[in-house]
Length: 445
Image 1 (cartoon, rainbow, N blue to C red):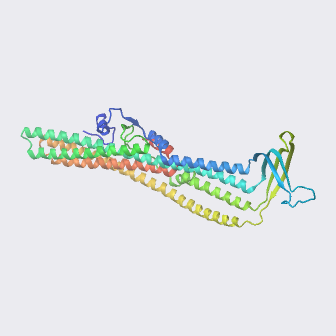
Image 2: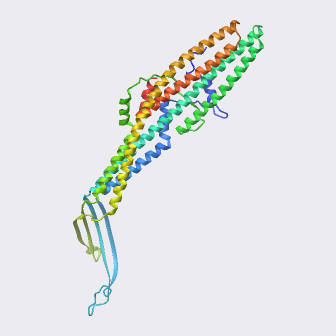
Image 3: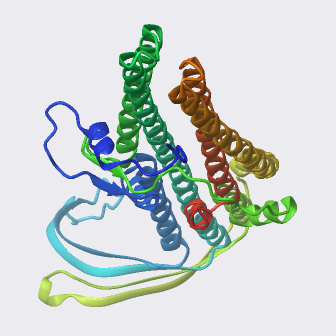
């Protein structure tokens, strides 16, 4: 007699579920939920693209840093031979030739420019730093979404494995019922109809088992696709579907904690800071800029006859007329209003996510309790009906009816436990730092 439907798959059933035509006799890889998450984070395309965007933002920051802080230094060298048409240059004296030359000169030197006061470049640098922060937070958010999807796929596979196990157990019960009906028929204490009913029930349960096995294999394929591994490779789930209660917490503290941890919310805040710095940079375009320029080198008619030359000058630039600045200011103000609206909407969305996850968690916990009671009662009903049929006080209609009731009770229990686990995953995503939260929630199972 079965004592529960959500338990570890027997080795023989696991092998049957994982084997396909032509597959090598390779031992299946055992995979925990955390291992699946790590593999997915390393292979998922969205995570890789988010990391590339962080590198791009870092490159833009480095450019702003070079413009705002570092000097510009270049080297120049030339050698030339030239003629000069004096008449064309307006020089005409008696006895002077119209064309002079050819003559040559040589130059080699360094030139440097260092900004001393440039508020626009400074704010552009700070804007780039905030953009890098936002990019890193976007990467964190992408990873949180990957974790949520992978956890859901792993849960689907766990649920499918539990259904396959329950279907296999029903086939075992139906096989035992058929043998009992045949033995009683041979002894003259049961009719041929009892045997026929048992055969029909066994055929139905075998059909359900085939469907459950196929759904389990399909769930493994979806999980392997998410992990970036070869679809169809031997795989075994190291964890099974099971219920673990989670202590309820107050909504408001959880919402506040989510607002300080959710990467997508923090990213919008960093993007807003970046826009504010861009606005300051826009205003600073009308401020004077102070720079220091210098050059040092040698020039002469021959390489050996070059004389040292140098230049050191301070420069102040001030823009009096710049209509482009007004248009840029309008663009930035519009972007700032837009991001403020997004921040407000996401804040409400985060609170909704937390409240919805808590409601689902509480409802699923109650469903698990009711489903467990129904499963126990269905087991008891099946046991009593089997005893009555074995004693000859009833036909096997009661047994078959009890088997169907048990199948529904088992499915209800699997659905309730799956909903509860998924609600925990949803709460982990709503709170932010999803991988860590899932590990904490699953530690209590």
